[in-house]
Image (cartoon, rainbow, N blue to C red; front, side, top):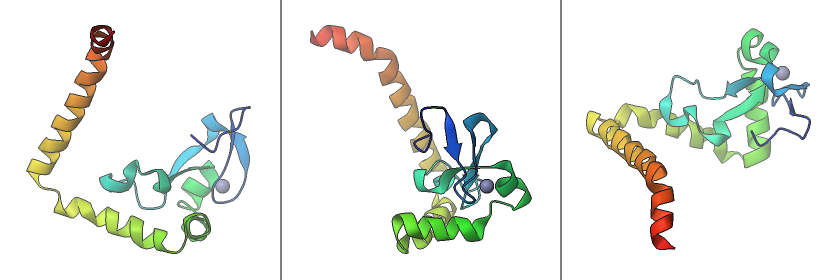
Length: 118
Ligand SMILES: [Zn+2]
């Protein structure tokens, strides 16, 4: 989490409250049920439980802060990414699975590859 400081404290993105990162939630602007933006860096910010649960993400404030941080295009950017999921076919998912399997495999074999290249 890039917004964490050396004491492992972090700041709520929407209200500014500071708390230990373990007490914080991962807050999404676009709902986490949309996979394309679920792990997107600009769509995941630390937030306090009050904002995330009681204020349902405090989205008015979230939007304002996103615009301040990334510019006004950000809301449209995230929104259009969210809709990408509707266009993902079974083949797309299979490709993604293969891609991550390959990545995992290359992690497993990396030390061996390094040895070979020495
Ligand atoms: Zn908060």
